[in-house]
Structures are given as C-alpha cells and as structure tokens.
Image (cartoon, rainbow, N blue to C red; front, side, top):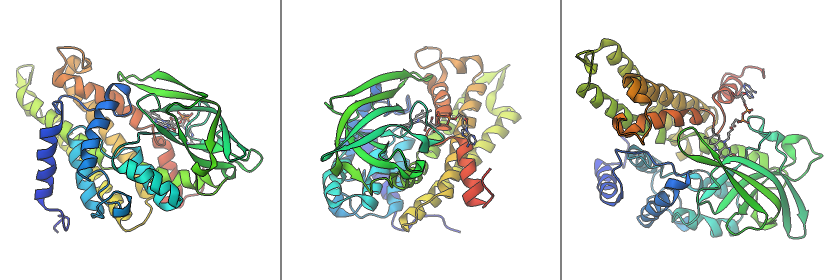
Length: 391
Ligand SMILES: Cc1cc2nc3c(=O)[nH]c(=O)nc-3n(C[C@H](O)[C@H](O)[C@H](O)COP(=O)(O)OP(=O)(O)OC[C@H]3O[C@@H](n4cnc5c(N)ncnc54)[C@H](O)[C@@H]3O)c2cc1C
C-alpha cells in the first residue's frame, strides 16, 4: 500500500525546509521553543509573521479568511515539518479559535479575527481552567453578568499563557448560575491588552518556564464577543477541545529527539561499550520508534477526518493519550540512557544534547495533563469509543 498523499509532493517539503533553515534565527537542533512562555513567545510570534506572509499558517482555510484553500493534508505536512524543527506553527488561534469561529462565529467575528489569526497578528490564551475547576470543567465559577451591551466578568483563570505576549483570551464563563451546570456557560472572547480589571500572575513550571493566573475584576466584555448562543457555550468549548487534542506536532518533535538519541548512542560509550551495541537500549529505542510512527499515523487519521468536515472526538482523545504518553516514555528513556548527566538542565555546560531532552522530559508531564488529563481521555474513550457505561 502506498501511504503518500495526493497533491503533496516532496518539493513542498523541500520548500518549507529551505525557508525554515534560512529564516530561523536560532539553531533549531539546540532547543525546542515554548511559545506559551514569555522568554520565547515574541521570537515565535515574529517568526510566525513571516510564515503568515507566505500564507502557510492557515493554508487550508478558505481564501476569504486569509487561507489558500489548500488541502488539509498539505497543512498537516507543513505543521509536521515545522514541529520537527522545534516550532509549533499551529497555535491556539490557528488550531482552535479559527475553526470554532468558522463553525459558530458571526460574520462580523469572522471578519474581525480570522485574517488576523492567519497573519499571526493576534496571540490567544485559553481561559478554561480555574483554581477549583479542571477536569470537572463544567463546575467553573467565573461569572459574566449582563449589563447593557456588555458582560461584566469576574473570576480567575489558571495555567494559561496570558502572561506570554497574549492579546486575547477565549474563555468559558458562567452566565446563568441557576441553570444545570453545563447549561449556564457561555463562550466569549476577551481582549487582555490594556484591559482594566485584569491582573496576571506568573506560576513557575518545573521546566524553566511559567504559566499564568489571570484574575478578572469587573472586566467589561462586549456582547458582540459572545461566540454561539448564550448559555450554550459548553458545546462550543467542547468542540474546540476536539480541535485542541489532535495535532501532529508531538510525533514530529519526538521523531527529531529519537534521531538525536540514536546518534548519541552511536557516538557515546558506557563501561567501554558503545550504547548502540547494548541490546536493551537497541530494543527500547526500536519500540519507541514504532510508537512514534504509530502516533503520527493516528494524527494523520484525525487530520483526515477534519478534512472530511468530521469532528474527531474519541479519535482525538486516543491520539492525545497515546501521543503524550509516548513522548513521555521516549524523553524518559533519553534521560535514562544519558545516565546522571541526563538530569542536567540546559544551563549546564555538561548537559548532553544541550539539556534539551531533560527539558522536554519535564515538559512532557504537563502534556499529559493539559487539554484534559490522560485519565479523562480514557473516560472519553471508554464511554464514547467503547460505549461503556459512565463510571
Ligand atoms: C502545562 C499545562 C498547561 C495548561 N494550559 C492550560 C491553558 O492554556 N488553559 C487552560 O484553561 N488550562 C490549562 N491547563 C490546565 C489543564 O487543562 C488542567 O490542569 C487539567 O484539565 C486538570 O485539571 P486540574 O489541574 O484541576 O486537576 P484535577 O481535575 O483536580 O485532577 C487531579 C487528578 O484527578 C484525576 N481525575 C479527576 N477527575 C477524574 C475522573 N472523573 N476520572 C478519573 N480521574 C480523574 C485527574 O486525571 C488528575 O490526575 C494546563 C495545564 C498544564 C499542566
């Protein structure tokens, strides 16, 4: 069977490769950028503007929204090539807000936001989780009270990227406190830049980065920024998660790490023997190579569904749980193979591969939590995939 994609010739991959290698202002083999942290976000945004000028960020979108009406799979190949080089081109705007606005947005919202997402003019943060609401997201308490043409929003959103050069937040807010919990929620777009009543605190992560805690104190959000129907935002927010959980970036980044690890094993010895000659290490690397490739094919399946206008649901959860756990295993193996040096962080001159594997390993634990934990994904797969009763 031939798994090549129609209309995606190798010339396209080469074009991206040449562009990235010419334009990327850093040595992409040395670090993975974290666009949700302030130390990297400006660099990533500036680079993405160049990609936007090429029309690549949203090539699969319709032309009227700043796209090129290219095939969905072509977009996937682009995202894959970028992630392999350490940069996630599919940010929250491109991957989540854009598709959601196309499904649920008003004409005015589409006109206002989609072209700016396509040209990387807006950086979005995601305001779902709260200090007391994570997995049980529908228990969220951030209130939005109607006042004339506005909602007045008060509450807190946590673990987001609002501290990192973020202009707007898409958020779930409670508009009807007396309704059953899933039915009193709305989905709104809130401008953060220069907004009175918004306070942002930074929370340190274990991989030398931060995430944000944002407090809203009577912040005015125009009603025209409501997406979908009032009090029906839960369904808008849930559809967005299906877009969030797919994504070919993970196996693409993992493929690069795997290649680097294989090289490392060919060049380094332990107890006088090349690591590459150790049958246990060979076996573990081969096993992980299979899992990385499997993740990639699962992501292709999700992307194909999106290209058919199907919303991937259990498929997205399967891909998310398998993909995040695979990269955690791979990076964990990398740290182990490097022995005690593997634990050194990127600041140490003794860190093998510039500490990139250690950093990615620590970050990979967050991957199994963000966008719904592995346990929650397994619940989705059990109920919607296997049709088991609710536990
Ligand atoms: C790196 C990172 C980035 C993030 N980015 C964002 C962001 O940009 N925007 C945003 O809104 N949120 C973000 N989050 C938050 C993330 O979505 C939540 O952390 C996640 O949904 C879990 O919620 P919680 O932390 O409140 O844990 P809890 O919900 O308190 O869960 C604690 C533990 O209990 C388990 N558990 C809970 N309920 C069940 C159940 N029903 N069945 C089985 N097990 C269960 C969980 O799996 C977990 O192990 C991010 C988190 C991380 C780590």
